[in-house]
Amino acid sequence: KQEVTQIPAALSVPEGENLVLNCSFTDSAIYNLQWFRQDPGKGLTSLLLIQSSQREQTSGRLNASLDKSSGRSTLYIAASQPGDSATYLCAGNRLAFGKGNQVVVIP
Amino acid sequence: SQTIHQWPATLVQPVGSPLSLECTVEGTSNPNLYWYRQAAGRGLQLLFYSVGIGQISSEVPQNLSASRPQDRQFILSSKKLLLSDSGFYLCAWTEYRGTQYFGPGTRLTVL
Image 1 (tube, each protein chain N blue to C red):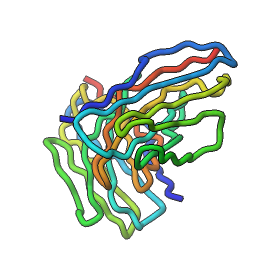
Image 2: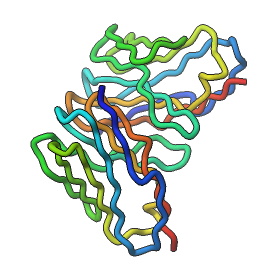
Image 3: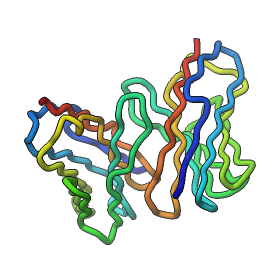
């Protein structure tokens, strides 16, 4: 069964700093990995989907990488803004979710 | 474009009462459909998923059930709610091995 771990569970950074969020998974036979954002009391918004044949995906200030051999994915958010404050979740095979990285960007 | 609807948005129910949450998807055909629960301070728990009409797979044994009477309709039900059923219920859909999209969620409080 796929297990997903996200580290750190919570972090606060000053505005303008780069954010690095880590996701590790136990099943290397992964066919895709997805990163989501969740605002308090809201549903999940898809940010990036990386297929197993890809190494990374980029969208604006967001970049996500996938290393199947080590069972890791990293979400990188450049030049963080207060609006980036949210919980970020990753999901792997069978849509097993991590518990999320709770991010606060301090103005 | 595809849209996913969930209702109601919030619900307060007494212990032992029945439950019916509905989810519908627009703009796609034959989606894979999912029900998740997110309890306070915990991660997302996959409850049910469906790859077609009448095809339901349960991930976690509990007093909840799901049905898919139409291609783009997914219903979560319970005959008798427990206190532990409180949580945030999310419906989602995917195309095969594609991006997963979530609905706005239903906040259920069982008293």
